[in-house]
Length: 531
Image 1 (cartoon, helix red, strand yellow):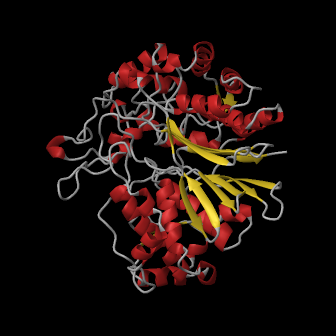
Image 2 (cartoon, one colour):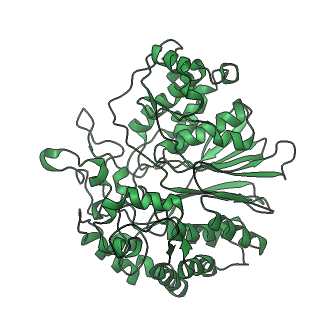
Image 3 (tube, helix red, strand yellow):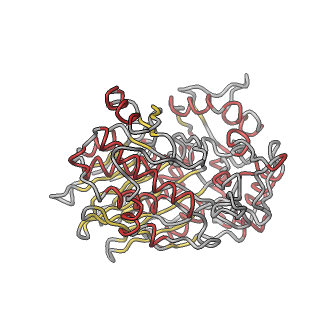
């Protein structure tokens, strides 16, 4: 079973599986196709976090392919005049300064070298994407909308305009056949010369030139930054919830620790009894609020800060934090500003016929990342360094855990997850959405495990979000004014927000583990497929 954010990527991955490849092979092929058809969300110009379950050994491996700051980065790199942080949009997310050293290519090469089948070489897995890039594909309404929404940023960069805009200087519209010969050429070069072409060869030089000579906020990357980039295998973070085992990515991703802390708090209550009443929504909101406060305070790159991962995921810590929670009054929020986040980033969930599993969240951060396409190479560069705190010091003058720094990896919210019960797989899940990713995954958990929804409904149902700010609710059930008024009576600032996330999930039938249900979020344009 495969679930990705685009039908063409799903079909490419499924064809790999049907031709004797395994889950690792299929994930690599799907990523390169997503690079073609979802250029705004992921690709070789970005990074990601990869979870792999090896069925034969029943082990979970997690790999950190997060982008890194160049060695010339410093804590005040996003401060402008009078030491005031650049506005997040569009200044911090646009141009060369926000580009981190990409990790996706080395990440997938590492995963394939460890777990790929002998049926497909790494270079062969570029073939489906190359064909699609050369033949072209019809721009979807979703991609056309993103091009329109981001047009002012994208216009700043000649190479981006050349690929994604027409002769009149307007973004290509829905139905236009987009051919990407430069990207196909880059993939063919990687087939011939391997990943070294990207990290120490001609592509590396082109990336550095693009970043350092950007017409907006030039960056600081050097060839040495690419040469010394490394993928890191890290221990998974592990938690439990009502008898289910949850494994996810640890720091520098905040997704796993924040999700597990929120679930530990909610485990102290009977959500199934409260349902989606005002009290139930209040509990879900407050658990997220508390866990986001701890996320913002503690999580950063573990190579640069001591991060209390075990404490954050402990049941005792959840009990301690929950003592401030009551049904009558909403907890106060911190002064941390809440950044916007849309449907950028992408997620891939796969299980093969041997039971090997992939949960892979991949990104270039904002929609169209930094806005820059590398000239002659056809791929968009990330803006991941904007995930560092723009204001690097706290109120006491101490550097924050997530302050920028040389060689440092910014905090992420990506939350690729495996769920097991008594050693048997239950769920593979993940989502895009910036800091909203954690809530998207949490809501699917609660809908499926507590509220006993069917898989499709668990993904489709309206979501509840709190990032240590207002209580944010998707349209749907929450338009009911009595519920909203009761939440406001408890002290919540209730904000109705557009739908968020684009969950890709595989559910395993509880009574028959061989029966799989793939679900692609109706908020996006993805498609599950299996046989």
